[in-house]
Length: 126
Image 1 (cartoon, rainbow, N blue to C red):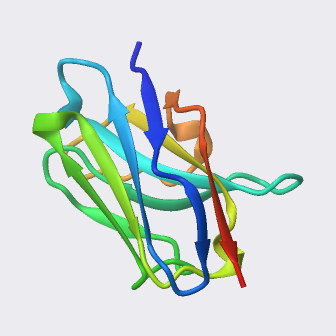
Image 2 (tube, rainbow, N blue to C red):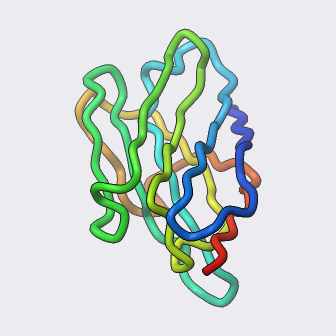
């Protein structure tokens, strides 16, 4: 089973930046698609960004496009989410997710992911 651990969350003012990290266990990290989701209490967990396995294709939710960047370092078994120009609406618990997938496919639905981290809180003040 793949284990995921998020880090890098915190409190930041609107317009500021944060970089989230997700460290993954496993010997074949490059064969897994990775995604970031976020959830506010009482709301549905929503897709934020995803990156495919070896092809490295990325996809973003419209709400974060142009502000967030997902990347991966396969040598470190780590995926990142660089968040710039943060808005109060970005406040949420951010979750890292993983699933075995083809080199080009980016899952965008919660049920499509097999493994999840425990989440890290991001709070953006106005």
